[in-house]
Length: 317
Image 1: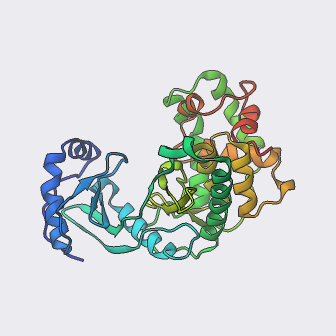
Image 2: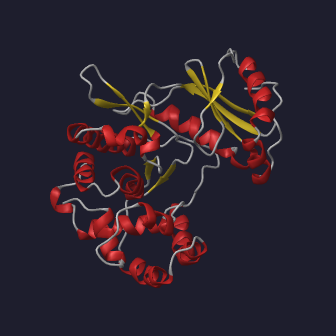
């Protein structure tokens, strides 16, 4: 689709940071883009959270991708098209997608509800049980879908991606401030964990409370109303998905994680120490792994070892 708005140039990460900070510079181009797409920009409102500019406009959402992230609009649009109407948790339908002036954009449905992280403390045990079950079933359905055909979808070579992540793990975590006693354990831990194999599946990769929308139903119970933010989607090992499930949804809640994994399809006998260590290994290999920051945010292990960390963060007892 070709449109003729003029958005501020965003050719570099630094330029994007400047544009992101200067809403006045971005808004006129966004309004012109809305009009070119046949959308009334009255009431245009930018969402405060997120690393990309995202706007609510009526019952639609307009998400923008600067040049350094422009390939991600094709991923978001392609995966949303593949999953829409196919998962237990709703996902946005896509109305338009394209690029202009070096920016990509996706115009999609605006789903009701608020991010789960805003109301987690107000949910009941029954709410969380129900949400765990539905989330596990949703991930199973997602992983069973055929992957869409998306040009230049990264990473093209999953095995190569994993090998690179493994090779660079210690250096990357050191640069992020991980303490030496933890750094000293990384190589040996990864060497003894067998990640398993199997065909790549369609992954969201960032299942987290911020990307799960919820609202109260007629009975007052909290229920999912949406799963959003598919631009970091990949095709890869299914257990890579559970990094987000453990570190950004259950966050040490063993009951929630157990119910989600059993709803996904794991037998109770498979929820063992070997699984916990695999999931921690995938955590260390995750594209956005930041163990130092996550150690400050998530529950502390019984002792300062990676085995103890696996048992705490991915507990299912």
